[in-house]
Image (cartoon, rainbow, N blue to C red; front, side):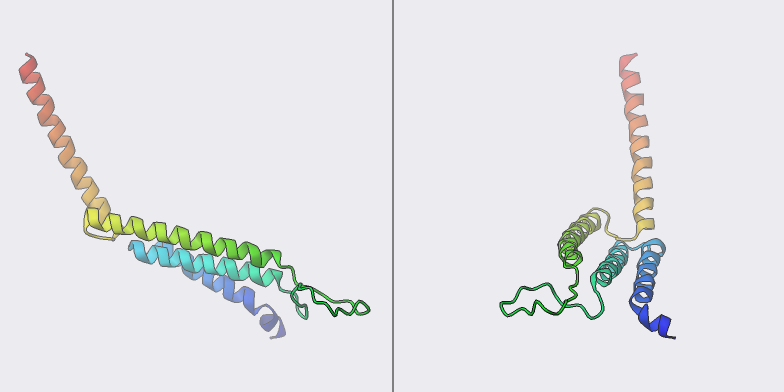
Length: 143
């Protein structure tokens, strides 16, 4: 039991990653896919932040009255800084994804992947028929 409690953050990360991955794979709705990607991304953030935390360590902040006689253990701030940058990039990526879904909805009237594929196939078929008519008209005018 102590093993589970000492590694609880990793268990939570694995559960969140698998949940996000499952939503991305199983859902056909584009908004749900973005939510799954966000969940997966948050799990990665938690994983990296938990790697940078050392039990019993403090933040590496300089103070004026420092006691040089006792050794102090510091946590690594690099992982936190990198995750802050990753959060900004993640928010920007999510906003681009949402903007694309708005345009897709305006163009197709749906956010379901299957419906979009059907509409695309129908448009391709109509385009092929129009091309055949144009070719027939051109051949009749040429000869």
